[in-house]
Structures are given as C-alpha cells and as structure tokens.
Length: 275
Image (cartoon, rainbow, N blue to C red; front, side, top):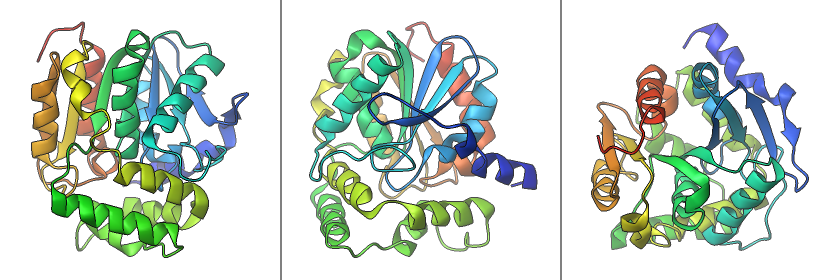
C-alpha cells in the first residue's frame, strides 16, 4: 500500500457528521446513494478504498456501526435485529428512500437483514465476507469468542491471524486494522460481536424472497466467511451471484481493493438480471 493510500485510510474521521440518533458517517459524491457498513471491531475508515473509487459514480455514505468509531452504542445484549432497525433509522434520519447497500462481515449480516425486512428501500445488496448457517463447530467457536469478549478478554491477534493469515504482520493494512481493533469501545464491541456470533441464521431463510440484485463476495482463503457460504446464499437468492477472489482472506476489500472495486462497479450497473 502506498503512503497516500495509508493517509486516505486514516484521514476520513475529520469529515464525520452525525445523525439525529447518534450515528457517525461520512458522505461523499453524488448520484444514487450507496451505504457501506463495516465489520465488527472496525470503523468506517475500513471502506476508504471503496469510498475513493465509488464516490466518482455515486453518493457514498459510510457509517460507523453502533458502538464503533464515533457512533453511539446500542443497549448491551442487542441482537442482530436491533442493528437492522438501527439501519432503518439511519436511512430515515438521512432521508434516504431507496439505497444500494453493501456490508462487510457483521455489516453483511445487517445488510442481509435489511434486504429481508426493508426490501422496498434496498435497490441492490452486496455481502462481502458474509457468514451463513455456520456448522456446529464454527458456531461453537464464535459463540465462545463472544462470551470471552463479553467478559473483557479481548484478543486482537487471533482475529488478525484469521483475517490476514500468517506472514502479513508488516503490511500497512494489517497494522491499521490492528490499530482499529485496539481503539474499539469494549462495550460496543462486545454487543456487536454477540449479535454477530448468533446472527448467521436469523435471516438465512429469507434469501428466496429477496428480489433485488444480490452480490456475495469473499476470499478463497477466508476460513470463516467461506466460499461455500457465498455460493449457498447466491444460489438461494433469485438474483444472486457469487464472486470468490483467489488468494485472499477476510479483509479482501483492503487487500484486493482494485478487484473489489471493479466487482462493486459491475454490481452497481445491474438492473435486476442474474449474472
């Protein structure tokens, strides 16, 4: 990553605004609105490469998830459904009638919930590194991590190893992601992670009813948001399709930004046909 790109990733906070209900966001570009929701432990800066590229063609609104960045928390113990309601309130506060919506990881779960429950307001939906119907072992592991986080035992290195793989410690995006995890509000992180751990099946049965174009993207080496999950969701959604980016893991929008941006550009051009 170039020095200019690092600056781009760290400078977005200066332009944050806040909604009436305490959601922090940045707003860039003009045209059809595109709302971006990051993953658990992150902040809206994680979308910097997408904001820079996509704001040339549409209005990009990247938000800090509740309890992250500068957004107010939800109540402790809030489930995934509460995060989806939060998104609906955000759209109301920003007077956004109909949006394109992309989420990463926990943000993907929120995006999927919005596609299921706010269908008239979602023009297109994209799930990046989204989880879907974890197997029992994966479910037990993520619930155990959620319980540890709730008790105050926050592990930073474990997620980074899962997200980037071994040997990535000197990369700029690894260092920045580590800094975001260290800075996250512990209570907001615990609430979001618990919703994430228990949220993989909440809206899983709704994909056959989602009629908008639906993109499911992940990295071929992502051990938790697997290619099989992306393909299964794509098969369930009437207008769904999957993109698997070879050689990348969970933070694919940062490790393969040009590829991800090109795929999102294509997604934004869809008028309902299945790829």
